[in-house]
Image (tube, rainbow, N blue to C red):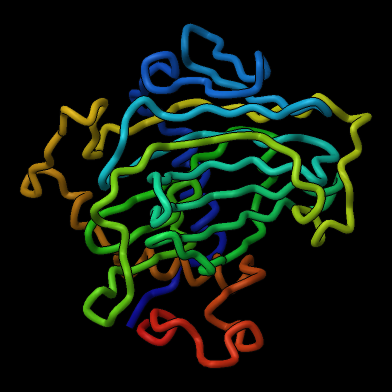
Length: 285
């Protein structure tokens, strides 16, 4: 039987994980600013990156490396105040018409109302696997760690070390799983007030611009990556335990707490959306 942790112990663990430092690389070394015409910038000798959005344009960046499996951490501080209509996207994606993608998207809201954390998994160009959450803290007040752990067994989404969602490899049951297309990391801050906040009912208040999101402490020490199509960094499964990591019983308890208390949408319970039957993975546990 799974021993479910208390909410107090989970919050204590979350706080401790935020305080633990890790060796991280420079944003200069790991990323290229790709758009925004000066609205994204790197500071503090490569340790801080900011993206800004104004009425003319947003901004974004992408990794120099491509990844095929890994444990990737990024600390982020989101747009403060009235962020309605803004989206801060942080995701991995391959290229082409049948791309794979692993998404974190943060949907802004009016002052005092919670952000929505939107997650999705695409395989072969097909998504429709949305799960959405509120967060148990103010993501604009300080930096918090958002992690993708992607290996041949599962994709685990974590916030401050607490798992919020798992997408398992169910290829044996006919469910596609991303395992062969290397992905780059992308992040951007952009305006989407036609849908981002309450389905587009709340529009962006440009008197609050420029909006800004900040990034620190990128960590991709545990990963398989390449910087060129001519190169590849292989992984030794015997020395890379993350390659075969799944949730333990305590982590399942943490995830149950998050999903019971903070999940606001789950495609696997949306029978109206899937009148012909829920997606296969929804019935596999």
